[in-house]
Every structure is written in C-alpha cells, then in structure tokens.
Image (cartoon, rainbow, N blue to C red; front, side, top):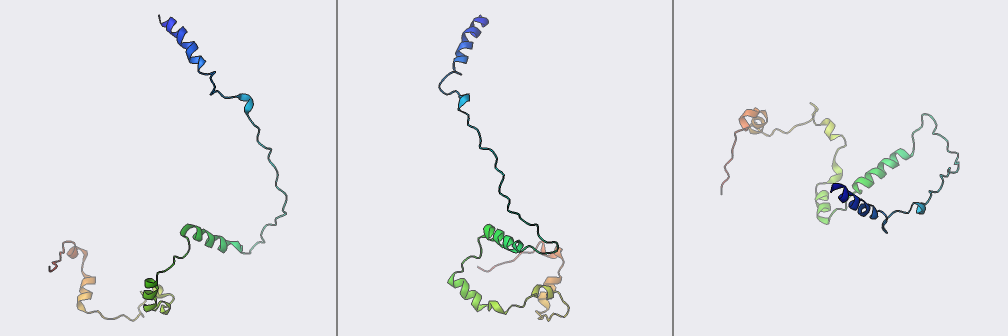
Length: 130
C-alpha cells in the first residue's frame, strides 16, 4: 500500500518543478569584465609632513555625525549675552584646583556639609512646608 502511495505521489511532486515559475538556465547574464583604472601617477606623501586633509576630514566627520552647530533661539542668545559669554578665561578648569586660586568663604555650614562623611547623609530626610 505504501509503495502505491509513493508511486502516485512522486509524479505529483515532480510535476511542480516544471511549472511556469521555474528558472531558465539560459537567461543568465554575464558580468562586465573588471577594468583597471587609469594610472593617475599618485605620489606618496613626503616623510615627516602632516597631511593637509587630516583636519578637514575630522571636521567633516564631526559635521556628518552631529550636524554642526544648532541655531540658537532669541531667548537663548539673550541669556548667553547676559552671562557675558566672551569673558571666560581660557584654561579655567586647569586652575580650579590650584592652591593659589582665590576662594570665597561660604561659611561654616558649607564647610560642614562638604566635610560630612557619607554615612551621615544616607538616611537624611527633608520636610517641605505645604
């Protein structure tokens, strides 16, 4: 019985291969041959010189990633102008921890807060009036 089912099922299964959806092995196209590019006689960079395109490529990459400076709104420009954006000292971060830096005394409370051990602040809570 199994042989009879197999003999009937085999031609049905093979008939699906010859339908209109089969591939035509003669319809294959060939790729164009590889072409050697023309010789531009490029010269290697001289030893010890800096490439002039290194900085340009870095700025192009930053421009592509981040899109350049964002336009500022009138309110943002007003805040920056009020803060006097051009008055900052270059290298301020380098001199922040310098012992010669002039520091304003904020009082004993601020010193106590900064000097407090971590364990004191872990269970701290605050009451806010309502």
